Length: 272
Image (cartoon, rainbow, N blue to C red; front, side, top):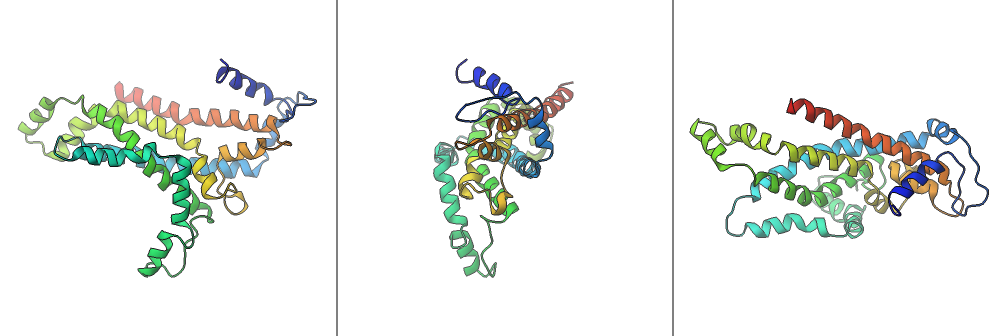
């Protein structure tokens, strides 16, 4: 009630006011904040960045963890080490990982330095200043850090796949690839949908990765800023516009519902 329901209801209330962080005279402004959203170019820019981030992360974090889970599910000597290695990034601090990524992708960082030494590139790539390179750099960080988490979900689902199904398929002459699509994939379909939902929600709410890698600026002119970063920018400081930031939060809520509803509909069709 205190930390979830009340703040949510209060956000809806403030979206129709000109609320400020320090309080004062708060006036009802109707749908004025929502009308301003339609004329704010920054909102469109941030929304595009967030959607692109989600569209790139979704297939990577839905497929790659499954492939890794298939590799480490076998009970062979030493496999625990690899399971632990894949999961370790999950428990690492997002801030620390983002800082490490920043040092690696800097103009004088490891990636640019190594690429230039190998004559792959002539000059440093602007990983931390170019709009789309910032987004892709943040995607690489998110994928690397999230692989182990979603791998665990797939491992749990794969543990419920009966060996008799694979044995029956093998007796019918099905190879490894055929068994994957005919037996494994249908068995982990529920887990795959769950992961797709989690990835969509997390991707649309991305903040720390882009914020830290760009020093809180969102790149040159804020071009790589995400929707959550924009909400934070409008609401921070003593003169922040909490009313407008609340309206943006409501917009983000409904945008987040879109992929969830689409995935739910796809799941319904698949079950039918």
